[in-house]
Length: 143
Image 1 (cartoon, rainbow, N blue to C red):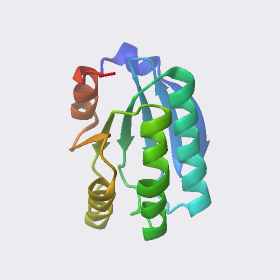
Image 2: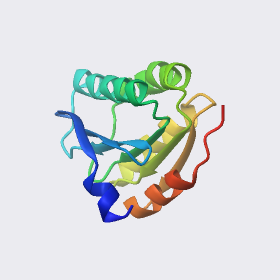
Image 3: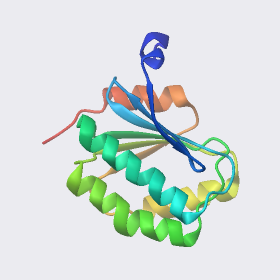
Image 4: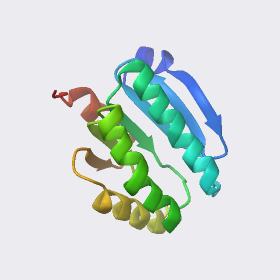
């Protein structure tokens, strides 16, 4: 993303799980903390993502995993069974770009979520933030 667009990004929410930013170029960016977060912090984090998506009519997500610890099995199950279906149905979420984490166990955790996620949200994984941003900017919304 060009620097002027990144400079317009706004911090919307922050807790132990990470920071949620609104990118006026058309997506919500999740910047994860490297520490392992408790389930309630992860759930609060994702609820704020959904709230931001609903209030801005944003249907694209960029999840920057960086040094994020792998999600627990309980968090993965909540994400795929509860949150992703709500994001698809309520916010009409369509695209999720994931910038891969450094930890191989984290990448396995991410693959588990992507594999178990319900149809309707297109996931794509990237090694750099710039690649993920480029894909999201080019992703055409339907409906």
